[in-house]
Structure formats: structure tokens, C-alpha cells
Length: 267
Ligand SMILES: [Zn+2]
Ligand SMILES: [Zn+2]
Image (cartoon, rainbow, N blue to C red; front, side, top):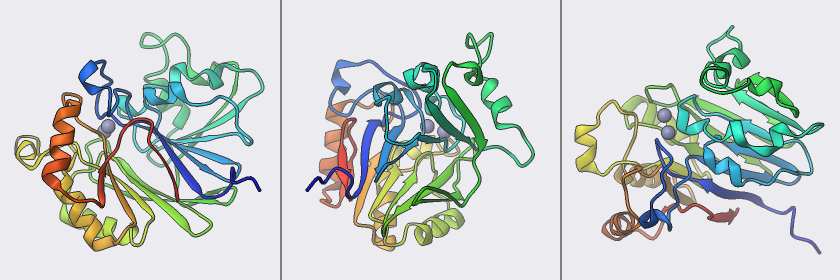
């Protein structure tokens, strides 16, 4: 019997934070920015569209949906050169967080139009649908929920649930009490939590208000929400493989994992 369509599956296409890099000493954890491909039966959902999206497949059983947590450039970087968007007859839906009443296509066009980019995404040869991101909604059997986080670009924390399994995506989140309590409840008993671990505690002192968290906050979240797996994401662009491995060794917790580009998990 085929197991291809069983389980909620996630593949990490990029987990570098803030800026794409190109360094040999980052080959293990990867250099592409935020993009996570989630497969649930025949559905495909991308969490963010950093340049990790360039390594995504083009063909899927059903048209994929790309959810943007917020509009910082590291989360949009891959959209312009994702080959699927330029293929005639292929439908892709992009869900864009916008203030109520604003046009999501217009907002994306602020980046993807001249003089910053040759043409708008809506004019690509593929069938590119641009919708406002508004929670909750369904993509087939996948339930998509979201709560506000705490980040200068108003990043949303997103939960995908499918057949009793769930993934919580908390990228670009800075620890702050009220939103953290909300996040604990939102992530309760999740199978996998992806959590922003960009800074060390020392670095955080110099980066208050930048919108990112630490591995220690991830530990606290894990202990209180009792998720099955906790993966740290959005690694600082200056962080080498050696430094990330040293951070993991210092933390010394088997249940907290420093995510690498190319990782896959079946829940
Ligand atoms: Zn980011
Ligand atoms: Zn951001």
C-alpha cells in the first residue's frame, strides 16, 4: 500500500532569517530564506515565500496555496522567480496579510513592479490569484488559523491542522507577555512548533524591538504548550554552522531542534 498521502508532512526549503546568504560555512543549516512546504493528502501549502521557494516542485496534485505571514522582503524573495507562476494554465493562490479593505495585489505590487521588479505577479503567464489572508479558512481538509504575533511588520502566527495533526508556524516573533500567553494556548498540544530562535539571550539585549526571539523562549513555550516537536527557525544571517551547532550543544535539550534547510518530517 502506498504511504505517499499519509501523514501531515513538512519540508524545509529555507530557514535563514532576514537576508539570503551565500557562505560555505553555512552549508549545513542553509542560506535560503523562510519557506516551508506542507503537504496534506493532495493539498500543498507553503508557509512564506523566501528564496527557498525556488527549489520547490512545480507540479502538484492540486493547486498550491502560499501563505505570507507578513510582507518583509525575506519572506517574499522567492515569489518573483518561482517557475510555477510563469507557467500557463497552472493556478497558484497567494494569501497576503493586508489591513481590512486594502487590495492585496496592490500591496504586493509595491515590491513586484517597476522600478523594483520588471512586471507585477498578476501579469505572469500562470493563473496567479492574490487574496487577502483572513482567518480561519479551509484549503480542502486543511484548516488554517492565525493569531497576531509581536513583530514590527505585524507577522501572523499560523496553524495548519489536518486529520488530527497540527503545525504551528511562529516565525518573526519577539517574546512579549500578552502575545506569548496567546501563543501558548494557540500551540497547545501541537505536533510541531516552528519558532523564531534568531538571537541568543545576550544578543537580544541589543536587539529589542527587532522582532525576534531566543531558544530559551522556545523552551518555555514548549514546556507550557506541550507540543511534540519544537524546531528553531529563522537563523541569523551572520550565524555559521559551527555557531549554530554550539548553540544547540549549550541548550542541550533533545526535544528542541535547530532546523536545517532540506529537513523533512512526517507527523
Ligand atoms: Zn523574517
Ligand atoms: Zn519580519
